[in-house]
Length: 254
Image 1 (cartoon, helix red, strand yellow):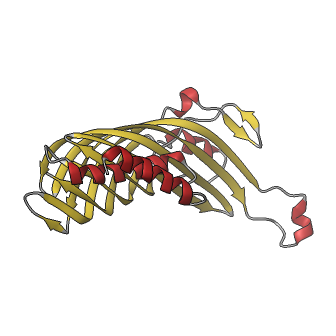
Image 2 (cartoon, helix red, strand yellow):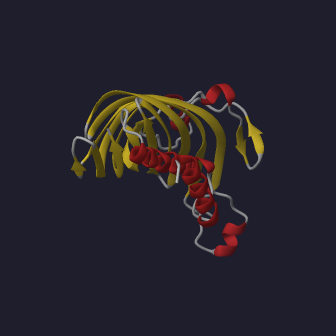
Image 3 (cartoon, helix red, strand yellow):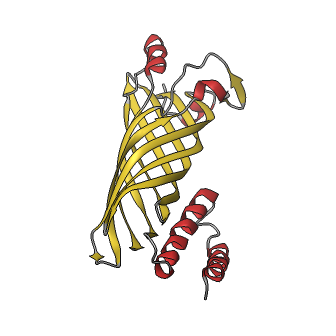
């Protein structure tokens, strides 16, 4: 069976079983790219071909300086400028060209005096990269991505009463939300821990990624509160450096 037929058959199977498990196109695209890369690795020997994917965890620096200025003035807790990021993705390799996708979630929360400020961010990117060093089970590559996401800023306080009826007419939470574009660039390195020889490597893999994300929230976003447009919102978002560690798996032919 040639590669074209394999891809067609793969897409049919995914559409049949994906249903509730793969609702977002980004994850479907990433899965297809990864599996197609693995199929190439079995048939093409001129260069390095294959794919790798996994789950990531790390730290994302945030641009929250302007936001914290207004939070402080309102007597609310300020947010830290570093937050936990987790998610994952995958990529396929054809020669030195790398194509893939990723998705990440970020949550940071601070409490003080019965008041809570919580920032939730989610975004996904389509990535293109270039391998700068590749040797059997190890590879290093530059990666650039473009995509979009959503920010949700929640501000709420503890209720004054513990009685259900009393709280029906008391609203203690405001949620501001907006969508935004995002751009990223970084340097990644992956190493396959399982089998490796002169012709192929595959199995369990670990990776490290460092880079910078830029989210121009203030230029294009419309903030909403209960479906009403909000003005005067300070500029903040996932703009800053990041570092993530990956554990997953994949395979490559040389």
